[in-house]
Image (cartoon, rainbow, N blue to C red; front, side, top):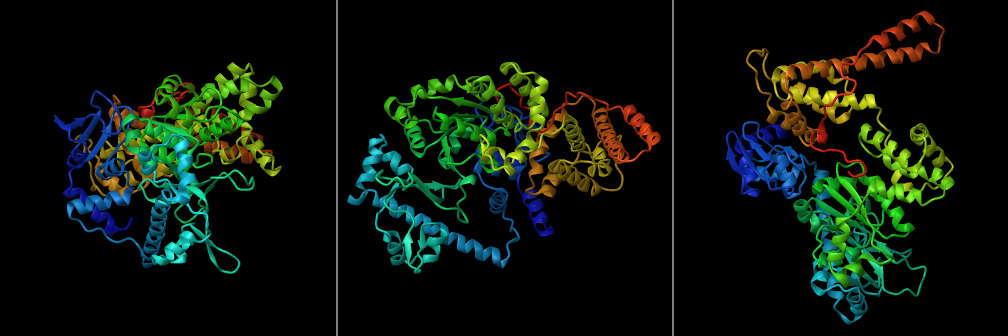
Length: 624
């Protein structure tokens, strides 16, 4: 962040009170002593747990969603925009001019991208009108056969791409839309003679929108099954604005409903989504025929969902789709369950025929994701089960907490009747065997979802990370603690926590030469948020602060955490030296190092402290 932008942010915060920004979206906000409070706008609750602190310039939910931040973060969350867009909104509101961070090339690219969006918007309008022409009658008949009503068809902008090879292209040319924009939007292509032709022909057209409601691509369904070489569904090819792995279908329509209820339902097909919304289930979305990705998980996190239900077909393809979805979502702090529709019925058909009631009944009795995985393994013969367990272990490896992974490994061994030591050994060798499978080009049970599985954190790493979180939390309460962070920053291996600790140390360095320990000086959290800018580390601030505030003795918490990370560093250093000596024959030096290693005492071998979202989220075995 450059100095001009930092000064602009400081000016915005001087002119903007966080309580006024929140009150625009939360009219029920009321003053209670030093703080303001209301029911959280990001989840349903009856007792107010959402509090605003004008002195710090922050807000925080102490309830289910456990989120918080400054005024910029509130605008981000409440208006579903990114950091810069939130900043622009607050700048306009407070009369501050933001410096333009874009280069001439950036500005030119923005203009070009708007041309691409414009081409897609015009195409969507053209397809929608074509649906209600005589040529579009078969597509409209198909929609009606699925039970979809005119209001639903219009709400989702469904249309029809005519069969002629140049219908859209000719219409675009007559409207002054250049061929370049059609090609860049994925709407048209050029043949070997240089002639442009429509990419979508004689297909039902389903527009795919981003979170801002802009059309970024299409899903096209064939209307005739006569040619087996013609795929049933064709999506827009990857373009500069269309990436399947970064989009969730209908999330733009479902977002507000998900935020209010905290529940998101993930299904397989476009018509499943439309049918659900038609009968009043407005939290239903779909991924675009791919495994869930980190970007999908980020969108789910941004939606505020606390529960995700996977509603896929009950066949083998549906099981694989469920595994793919789990692989991308298990890193989230949400409860995940699986809902199976009896028989082979399509969710769309069930919803249209019987309404929302049967689906709501199934949702009321879901299967926790872990129970679903174990049940699938128990259906196999013992020899098949031993081979198939890797798929389950790869899902367990996705869980972000070491203790959570340990608990699931123990449960898996117990339910399958395997020795726990054997299950642990197979789990620990997963990365090696995954690499071997890749080299041999053998398809794994869930290939796209698990090839990039993150390495499992050791328990020591997890405890050190927690200790660094405690250091940061106490430092953000009192400036005198923040001054002591500088020599510890470089010991931190976690990227986000390292950034947070370094930012705290920089802010503390600017507070003046002397701080009187007898007169505690509150750390300027607002300045920290400015220093962090849009870095993800800012999302850690409020939960770490909350945890530190609940400590009985800040001095003790800080000193114990510091001693923990320093001694853990000593152990790593000695272990490194031992490994080097292991290649030689200095037995006396090796014995000395072993003794030093043995004498190092870590203050808390099993701390009960928690950080980040752990402050407010209890892990449920088998349900997240």
